[in-house]
Length: 315
Ligand code: G3I
Image 1 (cartoon, rainbow, N blue to C red):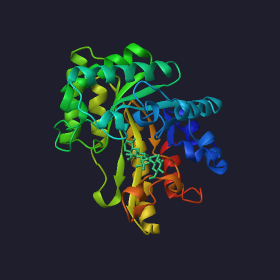
Image 2 (cartoon, rainbow, N blue to C red):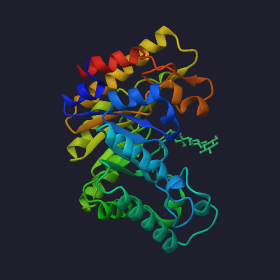
Image 3 (tube, protein in one colour):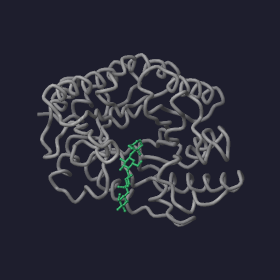
């Protein structure tokens, strides 16, 4: 039977998964990773703490391993992520920087990393999680020290280093129309008007059954399309309070189906990525105690109702 990637391809879309280096020794896991998906996101390996652990000393080990594996499997890579407030190395967070110092640090990091992966990745999540829930700028080292212009700068530097990579802003809780997605809409309008190289908006889609389905997701995707931007569902998972029951898994399946159908209904929604594909390697239980079962394959790598629902949506 056709894979998720093959089904998505018939619609001109990709179907992706995140992965992480420690998991790559699990051959039952890599067998599915290498066959069902045609887009891969490194869950951690391209983040700042991994790639520039000491100032000016770059380490491509983890990112390269995932790029190599993806190429061997004829998969593309959504590279993740250049500018974020989390998973920064200590040398960067443990001292005070002037604006001009920090700007130089950021520029060097972006130019060096994007050049290293130039021609090898489909896209970059250039800036990750820049806004608060109410649509104000998140108070990060970047915003505090450099002001809101760091976003345009980061996009320009990334474009300079790899003119063919698709450049994204990426965030969670922006699936529905609301204050946070409105902030991205306005920022995207501004950046486009200024000629800043922005190609897309990534909607992470870390959903939870107890908070309800984001009913306006298709409308939201469509408004970004009308700005001339690509969109993608970049980190999909649908968590629930444990234990997982048949009823919750059925509800979860309809959410996976509906999200996929929303993307297919919007021409410039280019694809869907799950934030890893098996509950065995999900980030959820560590961060939300008592919650989990968020992905389309269970901890034994068996497909769940959500997997069948994805296939149904892509049929
Ligand atoms: O590398 C250390 C290891 O040395 C140590 O022994 C171990 C003990 O806890 O921790 C390891 O670091 C962990 C790291 O992942 C690598 O596995 C961190 O504790 C853990 O917090 C970190 O979690 C990652 C998380 O981002 C951090 O915020 C998840 O794997 C990763 O999936 C997750 O991904 C984010 C996206 O980048 C952005 N959107 C949200 C998404 C989920 O949080």
